[in-house]
Amino acid sequence: MKQEVKIGVIGLGSRGRSLLRSPFLIHPDVTVAAVCDVYEDRVQEAASYVEQERGQRPVETTDYKSILQMDEVDAVLICTAWENHVNVAIAAMEAGKYAGLEVGGAYSIQECWDLVRTHERTKVPVMLMENCCYGRDEMMLLHMVRQGIFGEIVHCAGGYHHDLRGEISFGRENRHYRLRNYIHKNCENYPTHELGPIAKILGINHGNQMLTLTSMASKARGLAAYVAQEKPADSELQATEFKQGDIVNTIIKCAGGETILLTLDTTLPRYYSRGLQVRGTLGMYSEDSHSIFLDNQHRAMEFGWPGNNVDEYRSQYEHPVWQRYIEEGIKEGHDGMDWLVFCDFIKAVQNGTQTPIDVYDTAAWMCISTLSEQSIAMGGQPVPIPDFTNGRWVLRTEQN
Image (cartoon, rainbow, N blue to C red; front, side, top):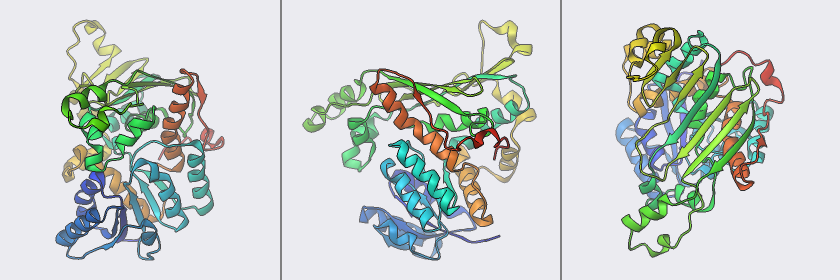
């Protein structure tokens, strides 16, 4: 087992910077060996922070390929703009470096296949760093589903319900990639926060498979209204026609007969939620009401349901990972999720083993973006979802 893991951080925007503070620099086995961004000021700021916290300044570069040439680097964390995630990950695998990708959707099916085939040829693991798979409620639900508490699972739903109008509209000022995506593309552009936990619950790529999807997008009005109110002097942005629909609904059919509903909802006023729902023959979970409804306990409470009872089930169904985590002390970063996903990635690098979210999961979850774009463009026509395992999902019954 390798004790010290030296990583390179590629991409130092808001997500890269936040991860650099926690969990990168508080993990005792991790050394940040190099930092990279296309913007020199971000590189210098990150390097100075690492030096201040650890006493050693990392290599600074604006060219990620120079990090991949460093023999001492074991792994890279890819926090770049969405468009560059896959090509940087492929280059990392070619260089023999474990690749951790921050979340986002794919831009073509071809790049998803390229990711899979590069892994199969090089045998170097890649991991989508989907922190929501490590959420406390999400992991407790997975634990309950595996024990049959909800019966046979029939349907799951989730969404990225997050008012991002400010972040998007000030994209030029903040050098943020979301703006150009909302101008030029219309798709489910951020599917994995909701899909990752659902895929684990339904055993996708491990005895189950997503088969087809259909997507529909509403008109795009939220950003234009926001810009008119909040940026009245920005004549260029006011004249911009945004292509991204305000609400995108994507329905997925699975080989096991289950359906999945994903909703992208980022450009209208609302509260934050990932809207997770799990529906089974014996009960359900709802994130928005923070409740578990079980047929044999709550049937008489169908009307006037008070909700907010999830905590009542923790003593019996808390996932063992979270039991240990609470005892050790929950770390910062999205209610502790960032620490758990990062630790699992580092553990795989240390042991030279496969990552718990592997290349097949990564490709399957990311491909939803480009497939939804196709379906929307065709008026909601169904499109097939590729089987990146080439049939091996039938035999891959043991989940990581």
